[in-house]
Image 1 (tube, rainbow, N blue to C red):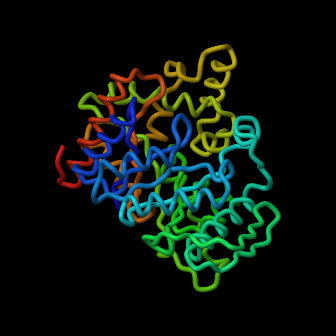
Image 2 (cartoon, rainbow, N blue to C red):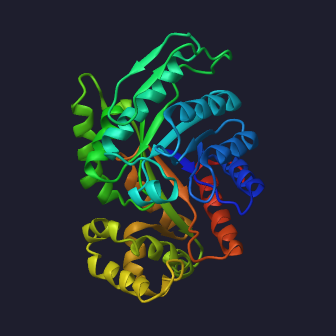
Length: 344
C-alpha cells in the first residue's frame, strides 16, 4: 500500500516545502486540492519542489474548465514534472458549479464521462494534426486545423476520479485509472460501500480487471504522543464535514446519525462550520479519522491493507490556527518517515 500525502501551506512556498519534506520522508505522491487555490498552479509549485514523488490533483474541478484546457494543463504539468503528473478530476456540487463558476452542471456521471473521454483523446492525438470529432450531450468536441507543435511527455496521462456515491463510483470503476475517496473514508465504508461499486464498474467493461485501477483512500490523520491531544486537534475537522447534510448517509452508516444531527443543529444555530469542535464526540473522531500516537495510527492504517492500493494522509486543518496546523502536519510527515524509513 503506497503512502501518499496532501500537504498544507499558508503560502505556495510553504506548501511546496511541505511537499519536499514529505517526499524526503517517503511519500510516493503529493496531492493538491482545488478550493482556496487553483489545483493546477499548486501542482506546478509542488513539481518544482520535488524530484521523485508523483504530483496529483485531488481534485481539479472537471466542469469549470473546458476539457481542452484541462488537457493542455495536464500536458504542461506532465512535461514540467518529467512524466510524474496524475490528473485527479471531480465534479464538485451543483451549487458550486453553477453559482460560483457559472459552469454547466448537466448530469454529473455522463458529464464527467464525456470530459474524461475528451481529455484522453486530446492528449493522445493533439500532436498529429488529425481532426477530433466527438459527439456528446454535455461535451461535444470538434477540432480541425490544430496541431500542437510541442512534443508530449506521454500520450496517456493517468486520470483519477473522485467519487463517493454509487453511480460515480461505478463510473470510476469503468473508466478511471484511479479512484480517490473523500477525506473521511473508514475501512468499513471502503469495504462495504465503495468496493462493491468499483467492482460493478470493472465488471461492466469486458477485460477490465481490479489491477487496472488504483484505489486511493484519503485519511485525515492526527498524531500526538498524548492521545487526548490527538483527538482534540481533529474534532473541528470532523465537525466541519458533519455540518454538511449531504454526508448524512456516511455518518448514519457508522451509527452516528444522531451525533451528526447535533452538529447540524449547532451549525444552524449560528455557530460557524470552523467552530464546531465541542459538539463532536470522541466516537465520531474515532470512526472517521486516524488519531493517537504513532503506534496506534500505524495500527489503524493497517486496516486499509488489502482494501486500498494507496492511502492519502493529510493533517487536520478546520478549526485550527496556522501554527496548530503546522504542528499537526509535522507530526504526519514524521509518521510517514517512521513508516517508510525516510528523512524528516
